[in-house]
Length: 262
Image 1: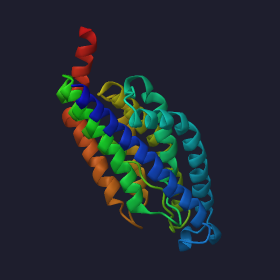
Image 2: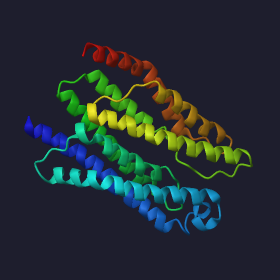
Image 3: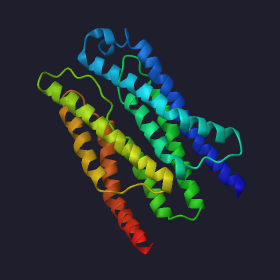
Image 4: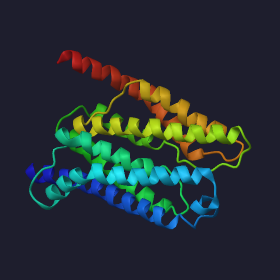
């Protein structure tokens, strides 16, 4: 039993550490090499979008590094020793750090390694899955846990990356505003869902998030439709909404009954 618990804990730790390390260095390289690379995404291109994206990426890196420093030290210490990292007690600062760094990940820059970014997100999702398996082994409500990890994973994919647009005004301005609004609203929402899941093994099924998300992400997809259809975001918005309406509402009712029973 102890070996199994240790394995789960270290696998979850590894997922978070790899997310922080990979995404941090990918975004750091973006700051260094985006100055004169990426054509229209180059900082020297004169496009106002790049100044904002570059500033957000820089702020995200600084905030992410500061906020992740203590959690990462604790994670690393637990990984190399027999100490257990308590996700039940320390998920909040961890989720805040994940969200802080993710802001930068949602900015498309002149030097962006998309495959490397997806690897970082893959490690984070792997940590979710391991956490779900761990909670199922512990005898928790398997339905709530499985629905939580599926819903959380789908929701994370609905956050649109901010891209340049060459539409005419006022559509271009509206599109940019929609992109940044979606990111600055949905990244914290994802951080909260992540915090709840890693802490309890069950995420929040509040109807607020699946109600706001399709509006924000859908607005980005809709405004950019004529220029380029963002099929990735569109597909995951649909999957998230279907998941919530089909099993998320059932999970919400079960959660309420469980809380009333306690």
